[in-house]
Structures are given as structure tokens and as C-alpha cells.
Amino acid sequence: MKRVYNAANLPDAHIVAGVLAQRGVRVRILNANAAGAIGELPVDSAAPQIWVEDPRDEARAREVIEEFVRASTGPPRHCPACGEENPPAFDVCWSCGRGLEA
Image (cartoon, rainbow, N blue to C red; front, side, top):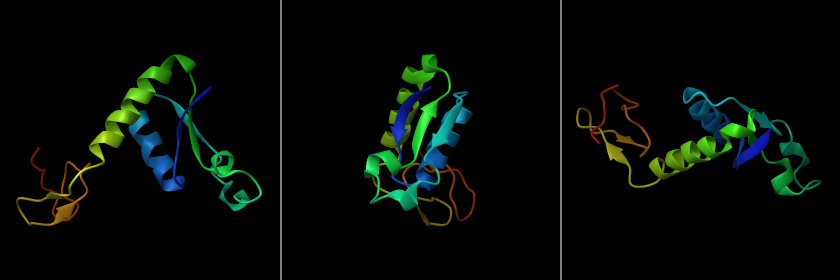
């Protein structure tokens, strides 16, 4: 196994793991229950981590993560149907379900 991502928190780790799984990359989340040890352990040792099961998937996983992070930053996207504000990474409006324009 090879570590490819240090998550800020457990929900972040699950989101990234889901994105990787959709792309066919098998991963594991380590330190999922170690948050209570922060302070006793260094933060980077207790924070959730994403590890690829097959080290040959490391480069692909890093590319997918970089693409996801890049798409997740930027200005919010407004829905053309209902006007609701959506995070930059959303392709579908969380409120009405309509596709968001690129």
C-alpha cells in the first residue's frame, strides 16, 4: 500500500475515497478513528489518510486527487433554474437537481 492523501477530516477522506473508487482505484482510509489521539500524537500521524491498495495506482490516484482539488476550488456556481448557490465542484444543483452549466 502507498499513502497518496492526508485528509483534513474524516468526511474529506470519505469524499476523496469515493472519487477514487468511481475511477476504479481501490483505496483504504487509515486513521479513521484516531482523531481523539490528536495532541497525544502529531496531527499528521492521527489525521485520516488515503492509501492505495496497489502501489501501481499511485500516480493515477494522485492525478485524480489533484483534478478533484482543482475542481473544488473557485467561485460558487449558481443554478440557472432556481438560482441557488452551489459549491464549485457540483455538476448538479443540490436544491433542484438541474445540471449546472460548465
